[in-house]
Image (cartoon, rainbow, N blue to C red; front, side, top):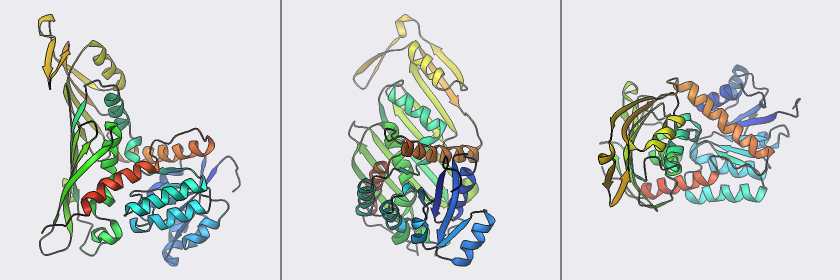
Length: 374
Protein backbone atom coordinates (compact mmCIF):
# COMPACT_ATOMS: atom_id res chain seq x y z
CA UNK A 1 0.00 0.00 0.00
CA UNK A 2 1.44 3.34 -1.04
CA UNK A 3 0.44 5.51 1.94
CA UNK A 4 1.29 4.11 5.40
CA UNK A 5 -1.15 6.55 7.01
CA UNK A 6 -4.06 4.72 5.39
CA UNK A 7 -5.50 1.35 6.32
CA UNK A 8 -6.05 -1.30 3.68
CA UNK A 9 -9.49 -2.92 3.55
CA UNK A 10 -10.44 -6.18 1.88
CA UNK A 11 -13.96 -7.57 1.57
CA UNK A 12 -15.01 -11.21 1.55
CA UNK A 13 -18.33 -10.95 -0.25
CA UNK A 14 -19.32 -8.14 -2.60
CA UNK A 15 -23.09 -8.27 -3.03
CA UNK A 16 -25.33 -5.21 -2.89
CA UNK A 17 -24.39 -4.45 0.71
CA UNK A 18 -20.69 -4.97 0.04
CA UNK A 19 -20.87 -2.50 -2.82
CA UNK A 20 -22.67 -0.02 -0.57
CA UNK A 21 -19.86 -0.32 1.99
CA UNK A 22 -17.22 0.24 -0.67
CA UNK A 23 -18.92 3.35 -2.05
CA UNK A 24 -19.43 4.74 1.46
CA UNK A 25 -15.90 4.09 2.68
CA UNK A 26 -14.25 5.61 -0.38
CA UNK A 27 -15.06 9.01 1.09
CA UNK A 28 -12.80 8.28 4.07
CA UNK A 29 -9.29 9.66 3.45
CA UNK A 30 -7.72 7.17 5.87
CA UNK A 31 -9.13 4.15 4.02
CA UNK A 32 -7.95 2.36 0.89
CA UNK A 33 -10.08 -0.43 -0.58
CA UNK A 34 -7.47 -2.98 -1.60
CA UNK A 35 -9.30 -6.14 -2.63
CA UNK A 36 -12.45 -8.21 -2.84
CA UNK A 37 -12.75 -12.00 -2.67
CA UNK A 38 -15.41 -14.35 -3.95
CA UNK A 39 -16.03 -17.66 -5.69
CA UNK A 40 -17.27 -16.63 -9.15
CA UNK A 41 -14.23 -15.54 -11.23
CA UNK A 42 -16.18 -13.74 -13.96
CA UNK A 43 -18.48 -11.85 -11.60
CA UNK A 44 -15.52 -11.08 -9.35
CA UNK A 45 -13.54 -9.49 -12.18
CA UNK A 46 -16.54 -7.53 -13.45
CA UNK A 47 -17.21 -6.14 -9.98
CA UNK A 48 -13.57 -5.25 -9.36
CA UNK A 49 -13.41 -3.45 -12.71
CA UNK A 50 -16.70 -1.59 -12.17
CA UNK A 51 -15.70 -0.46 -8.66
CA UNK A 52 -12.05 0.21 -9.57
CA UNK A 53 -10.72 -2.22 -6.95
CA UNK A 54 -7.13 -3.16 -7.75
CA UNK A 55 -7.16 -6.80 -6.59
CA UNK A 56 -9.73 -9.56 -6.96
CA UNK A 57 -9.14 -12.96 -5.37
CA UNK A 58 -10.92 -16.21 -6.07
CA UNK A 59 -11.31 -17.64 -2.59
CA UNK A 60 -10.75 -15.84 0.69
CA UNK A 61 -7.37 -17.44 1.40
CA UNK A 62 -5.50 -15.22 -1.07
CA UNK A 63 -7.08 -12.09 0.34
CA UNK A 64 -6.04 -13.10 3.86
CA UNK A 65 -2.48 -13.59 2.65
CA UNK A 66 -2.29 -10.08 1.15
CA UNK A 67 0.07 -8.03 3.36
CA UNK A 68 -1.59 -4.76 2.33
CA UNK A 69 -4.96 -5.80 3.78
CA UNK A 70 -5.20 -4.62 7.38
CA UNK A 71 -8.96 -4.99 7.90
CA UNK A 72 -11.07 -7.84 6.58
CA UNK A 73 -14.77 -7.20 6.11
CA UNK A 74 -16.91 -10.32 6.37
CA UNK A 75 -19.87 -9.61 4.08
CA UNK A 76 -20.44 -13.16 2.89
CA UNK A 77 -23.69 -15.12 3.43
CA UNK A 78 -24.46 -15.59 7.14
CA UNK A 79 -23.66 -19.31 7.30
CA UNK A 80 -20.08 -18.51 6.14
CA UNK A 81 -19.41 -15.74 8.65
CA UNK A 82 -17.78 -17.98 11.25
CA UNK A 83 -15.49 -19.66 8.74
CA UNK A 84 -14.33 -16.36 7.26
CA UNK A 85 -14.08 -14.42 10.53
CA UNK A 86 -12.07 -17.10 12.32
CA UNK A 87 -9.72 -17.40 9.33
CA UNK A 88 -9.26 -13.62 9.21
CA UNK A 89 -8.37 -13.41 12.90
CA UNK A 90 -5.92 -16.29 12.62
CA UNK A 91 -4.29 -14.48 9.70
CA UNK A 92 -3.74 -11.47 11.96
CA UNK A 93 -6.33 -9.27 10.26
CA UNK A 94 -8.59 -6.87 12.10
CA UNK A 95 -12.25 -7.66 11.60
CA UNK A 96 -15.41 -5.83 10.51
CA UNK A 97 -18.18 -8.41 10.74
CA UNK A 98 -21.51 -7.79 9.07
CA UNK A 99 -24.54 -9.09 10.96
CA UNK A 100 -25.26 -11.70 12.11
CA UNK A 101 -22.05 -12.64 13.89
CA UNK A 102 -22.83 -16.26 12.94
CA UNK A 103 -25.87 -18.49 12.59
CA UNK A 104 -25.06 -20.61 15.66
CA UNK A 105 -23.98 -19.51 19.12
CA UNK A 106 -21.08 -21.99 19.19
CA UNK A 107 -19.73 -20.47 15.98
CA UNK A 108 -20.07 -16.97 17.41
CA UNK A 109 -18.11 -18.04 20.48
CA UNK A 110 -15.42 -19.49 18.22
CA UNK A 111 -15.06 -16.10 16.49
CA UNK A 112 -14.60 -14.30 19.81
CA UNK A 113 -12.05 -16.89 20.91
CA UNK A 114 -10.09 -16.51 17.66
CA UNK A 115 -10.07 -12.70 17.89
CA UNK A 116 -8.90 -12.80 21.49
CA UNK A 117 -6.18 -15.36 20.76
CA UNK A 118 -4.88 -13.36 17.79
CA UNK A 119 -4.96 -10.02 19.60
CA UNK A 120 -6.71 -8.28 16.70
CA UNK A 121 -9.43 -5.63 16.97
CA UNK A 122 -12.97 -6.14 15.76
CA UNK A 123 -16.34 -4.43 15.37
CA UNK A 124 -19.84 -5.62 14.54
CA UNK A 125 -21.65 -4.01 11.63
CA UNK A 126 -24.46 -2.87 13.93
CA UNK A 127 -24.75 0.44 12.15
CA UNK A 128 -27.90 1.56 13.98
CA UNK A 129 -25.79 2.20 17.08
CA UNK A 130 -24.02 4.87 15.04
CA UNK A 131 -27.09 6.79 13.86
CA UNK A 132 -27.85 10.23 15.35
CA UNK A 133 -31.27 9.35 16.75
CA UNK A 134 -30.09 6.11 18.35
CA UNK A 135 -27.30 7.96 20.12
CA UNK A 136 -29.74 10.60 21.38
CA UNK A 137 -32.23 8.01 22.55
CA UNK A 138 -29.42 6.24 24.40
CA UNK A 139 -28.54 9.48 26.21
CA UNK A 140 -32.17 10.09 27.20
CA UNK A 141 -32.41 6.58 28.66
CA UNK A 142 -29.00 6.67 30.36
CA UNK A 143 -29.77 10.01 32.01
CA UNK A 144 -33.21 8.84 33.15
CA UNK A 145 -34.90 11.93 31.75
CA UNK A 146 -38.25 10.13 31.50
CA UNK A 147 -37.61 7.79 34.41
CA UNK A 148 -37.02 4.07 34.00
CA UNK A 149 -37.61 2.29 30.70
CA UNK A 150 -40.21 -0.45 31.18
CA UNK A 151 -41.43 -1.39 27.72
CA UNK A 152 -40.19 -1.69 24.11
CA UNK A 153 -42.61 -2.71 21.37
CA UNK A 154 -41.02 -2.98 17.93
CA UNK A 155 -42.90 -3.85 14.74
CA UNK A 156 -40.97 -4.35 11.51
CA UNK A 157 -43.08 -4.91 8.39
CA UNK A 158 -40.61 -5.77 5.63
CA UNK A 159 -41.00 -6.49 1.92
CA UNK A 160 -40.65 -9.88 0.26
CA UNK A 161 -41.10 -8.72 -3.36
CA UNK A 162 -37.43 -9.41 -4.13
CA UNK A 163 -37.34 -12.67 -2.14
CA UNK A 164 -38.68 -15.50 -4.35
CA UNK A 165 -39.33 -18.88 -2.68
CA UNK A 166 -35.90 -20.27 -3.64
CA UNK A 167 -33.98 -17.24 -2.35
CA UNK A 168 -31.28 -18.09 0.21
CA UNK A 169 -33.04 -15.80 2.72
CA UNK A 170 -35.75 -18.45 3.27
CA UNK A 171 -33.20 -21.25 3.74
CA UNK A 172 -32.60 -21.26 7.50
CA UNK A 173 -29.41 -23.30 7.09
CA UNK A 174 -27.94 -20.41 5.10
CA UNK A 175 -29.57 -17.35 6.69
CA UNK A 176 -30.40 -18.57 10.18
CA UNK A 177 -33.98 -17.37 9.71
CA UNK A 178 -35.50 -13.93 10.10
CA UNK A 179 -34.56 -13.40 13.75
CA UNK A 180 -30.92 -14.34 13.10
CA UNK A 181 -30.41 -12.72 9.70
CA UNK A 182 -32.47 -9.61 10.38
CA UNK A 183 -33.79 -9.42 13.93
CA UNK A 184 -30.37 -9.27 15.58
CA UNK A 185 -30.09 -5.61 14.50
CA UNK A 186 -33.07 -4.71 16.67
CA UNK A 187 -32.27 -7.05 19.56
CA UNK A 188 -28.91 -5.34 19.72
CA UNK A 189 -30.13 -1.76 19.37
CA UNK A 190 -32.71 -1.90 22.15
CA UNK A 191 -30.58 -4.05 24.44
CA UNK A 192 -27.85 -1.42 24.07
CA UNK A 193 -30.29 1.43 24.62
CA UNK A 194 -31.87 -0.22 27.67
CA UNK A 195 -28.51 -0.78 29.35
CA UNK A 196 -29.74 -4.07 30.83
CA UNK A 197 -29.00 -7.70 29.99
CA UNK A 198 -31.65 -10.06 28.65
CA UNK A 199 -32.56 -12.87 31.05
CA UNK A 200 -35.50 -14.67 29.40
CA UNK A 201 -36.80 -15.01 25.85
CA UNK A 202 -39.97 -16.53 24.46
CA UNK A 203 -41.29 -16.45 20.92
CA UNK A 204 -43.24 -17.88 18.05
CA UNK A 205 -42.72 -18.42 14.33
CA UNK A 206 -45.26 -19.00 11.58
CA UNK A 207 -44.89 -20.67 8.21
CA UNK A 208 -46.57 -19.38 5.06
CA UNK A 209 -49.35 -21.82 4.06
CA UNK A 210 -48.22 -24.33 1.45
CA UNK A 211 -44.53 -23.47 1.84
CA UNK A 212 -41.65 -23.83 4.28
CA UNK A 213 -41.08 -20.05 4.37
CA UNK A 214 -41.10 -18.74 7.93
CA UNK A 215 -42.29 -15.24 7.17
CA UNK A 216 -43.64 -13.92 10.50
CA UNK A 217 -41.79 -14.16 13.79
CA UNK A 218 -42.12 -12.63 17.23
CA UNK A 219 -39.89 -12.62 20.29
CA UNK A 220 -40.51 -11.30 23.80
CA UNK A 221 -37.42 -10.46 25.81
CA UNK A 222 -37.35 -9.88 29.56
CA UNK A 223 -34.41 -7.88 30.89
CA UNK A 224 -32.70 -8.13 34.26
CA UNK A 225 -34.04 -4.72 35.31
CA UNK A 226 -37.62 -5.88 34.64
CA UNK A 227 -38.15 -4.20 31.27
CA UNK A 228 -40.16 -6.17 28.69
CA UNK A 229 -39.57 -5.92 24.93
CA UNK A 230 -41.50 -7.43 22.03
CA UNK A 231 -39.98 -7.73 18.56
CA UNK A 232 -42.26 -8.56 15.62
CA UNK A 233 -40.87 -9.10 12.11
CA UNK A 234 -42.93 -9.89 9.03
CA UNK A 235 -41.49 -10.32 5.54
CA UNK A 236 -44.80 -10.23 3.70
CA UNK A 237 -45.36 -6.68 2.44
CA UNK A 238 -44.98 -4.82 -0.86
CA UNK A 239 -41.88 -2.63 -0.75
CA UNK A 240 -44.01 0.52 -0.79
CA UNK A 241 -45.67 -0.57 2.45
CA UNK A 242 -42.54 -1.31 4.46
CA UNK A 243 -42.74 0.18 7.94
CA UNK A 244 -40.66 -0.04 11.11
CA UNK A 245 -41.73 1.59 14.35
CA UNK A 246 -40.73 1.18 17.98
CA UNK A 247 -42.72 2.41 20.97
CA UNK A 248 -40.96 2.85 24.30
CA UNK A 249 -42.76 3.27 27.62
CA UNK A 250 -41.14 5.02 30.60
CA UNK A 251 -42.22 6.07 34.09
CA UNK A 252 -43.24 9.52 32.91
CA UNK A 253 -43.73 9.32 29.19
CA UNK A 254 -43.38 7.67 25.82
CA UNK A 255 -41.05 7.72 22.84
CA UNK A 256 -41.87 6.57 19.29
CA UNK A 257 -39.05 5.87 16.81
CA UNK A 258 -39.73 5.54 13.08
CA UNK A 259 -37.62 3.77 10.47
CA UNK A 260 -35.35 0.74 10.56
CA UNK A 261 -32.65 3.35 10.07
CA UNK A 262 -34.11 5.68 12.73
CA UNK A 263 -35.09 8.99 11.15
CA UNK A 264 -37.81 10.39 13.40
CA UNK A 265 -38.28 10.36 17.18
CA UNK A 266 -41.44 11.60 18.89
CA UNK A 267 -41.55 12.09 22.65
CA UNK A 268 -44.35 12.87 25.09
CA UNK A 269 -43.45 13.24 28.75
CA UNK A 270 -44.07 14.96 32.07
CA UNK A 271 -40.79 16.56 33.19
CA UNK A 272 -39.31 19.07 35.58
CA UNK A 273 -37.32 22.13 34.51
CA UNK A 274 -33.91 20.42 34.53
CA UNK A 275 -35.16 17.43 32.52
CA UNK A 276 -36.83 19.74 30.01
CA UNK A 277 -33.59 21.66 29.53
CA UNK A 278 -31.62 18.45 28.96
CA UNK A 279 -34.11 17.15 26.37
CA UNK A 280 -33.82 20.39 24.43
CA UNK A 281 -30.02 20.26 24.67
CA UNK A 282 -29.87 16.65 23.41
CA UNK A 283 -32.28 17.39 20.54
CA UNK A 284 -31.52 21.04 19.68
CA UNK A 285 -33.24 20.99 16.27
CA UNK A 286 -36.43 19.36 17.58
CA UNK A 287 -39.86 20.93 17.44
CA UNK A 288 -41.02 21.23 21.06
CA UNK A 289 -44.53 21.94 22.26
CA UNK A 290 -45.37 22.63 25.88
CA UNK A 291 -48.81 21.08 26.17
CA UNK A 292 -49.45 22.05 29.75
CA UNK A 293 -47.66 23.83 32.58
CA UNK A 294 -48.49 22.85 36.15
CA UNK A 295 -48.91 25.22 39.05
CA UNK A 296 -47.49 24.27 42.42
CA UNK A 297 -50.59 22.38 43.48
CA UNK A 298 -50.41 20.07 40.43
CA UNK A 299 -46.67 19.37 40.30
CA UNK A 300 -46.93 16.10 42.21
CA UNK A 301 -47.82 12.94 40.28
CA UNK A 302 -47.48 9.25 40.91
CA UNK A 303 -47.48 5.87 39.22
CA UNK A 304 -46.06 2.40 39.69
CA UNK A 305 -45.68 3.01 43.39
CA UNK A 306 -43.49 6.10 42.85
CA UNK A 307 -44.06 9.83 43.29
CA UNK A 308 -42.67 12.46 40.92
CA UNK A 309 -42.33 16.22 40.84
CA UNK A 310 -42.98 17.72 37.38
CA UNK A 311 -43.59 21.20 36.03
CA UNK A 312 -44.84 20.62 32.48
CA UNK A 313 -46.10 18.16 29.89
CA UNK A 314 -44.11 18.40 26.67
CA UNK A 315 -44.19 16.92 23.17
CA UNK A 316 -41.04 16.77 21.09
CA UNK A 317 -40.47 15.75 17.46
CA UNK A 318 -36.85 15.24 16.40
CA UNK A 319 -35.88 14.70 12.75
CA UNK A 320 -32.18 15.57 12.26
CA UNK A 321 -32.48 14.55 8.60
CA UNK A 322 -34.86 12.51 6.45
CA UNK A 323 -32.14 11.41 4.01
CA UNK A 324 -32.05 7.71 4.85
CA UNK A 325 -29.16 6.82 2.54
CA UNK A 326 -27.02 9.65 3.89
CA UNK A 327 -27.66 8.58 7.49
CA UNK A 328 -26.92 4.95 6.54
CA UNK A 329 -23.67 5.85 4.76
CA UNK A 330 -22.52 8.07 7.64
CA UNK A 331 -23.24 5.23 10.07
CA UNK A 332 -21.13 2.67 8.21
CA UNK A 333 -18.32 5.23 7.96
CA UNK A 334 -18.53 5.89 11.69
CA UNK A 335 -18.46 2.14 12.39
CA UNK A 336 -15.31 1.62 10.32
CA UNK A 337 -13.78 4.74 11.84
CA UNK A 338 -14.50 3.29 15.27
CA UNK A 339 -12.56 0.15 14.37
CA UNK A 340 -9.66 2.17 12.97
CA UNK A 341 -9.54 4.18 16.21
CA UNK A 342 -9.36 0.91 18.18
CA UNK A 343 -6.52 -0.36 15.97
CA UNK A 344 -4.51 2.81 16.54
CA UNK A 345 -5.34 3.14 20.24
CA UNK A 346 -5.53 -0.08 22.26
CA UNK A 347 -7.43 1.78 24.97
CA UNK A 348 -10.28 2.66 22.61
CA UNK A 349 -13.45 0.60 23.11
CA UNK A 350 -15.62 0.23 20.01
CA UNK A 351 -19.30 1.10 20.28
CA UNK A 352 -20.45 -2.20 18.73
CA UNK A 353 -18.15 -5.00 19.96
CA UNK A 354 -18.39 -8.63 18.88
CA UNK A 355 -19.78 -9.47 22.31
CA UNK A 356 -22.89 -7.52 21.35
CA UNK A 357 -23.17 -9.66 18.24
CA UNK A 358 -23.01 -12.79 20.35
CA UNK A 359 -25.61 -11.55 22.84
CA UNK A 360 -28.14 -10.67 20.13
CA UNK A 361 -27.45 -14.04 18.46
CA UNK A 362 -28.27 -15.80 21.73
CA UNK A 363 -31.62 -14.01 21.84
CA UNK A 364 -32.41 -14.88 18.21
CA UNK A 365 -31.47 -18.54 18.43
CA UNK A 366 -33.37 -19.05 21.67
CA UNK A 367 -36.52 -18.41 19.64
CA UNK A 368 -35.52 -20.11 16.39
CA UNK A 369 -34.88 -23.39 18.19
CA UNK A 370 -38.60 -23.69 18.87
CA UNK A 371 -40.77 -25.56 16.38
CA UNK A 372 -42.55 -23.42 13.80
CA UNK A 373 -46.31 -23.89 13.49
CA UNK A 374 -48.09 -23.72 10.15
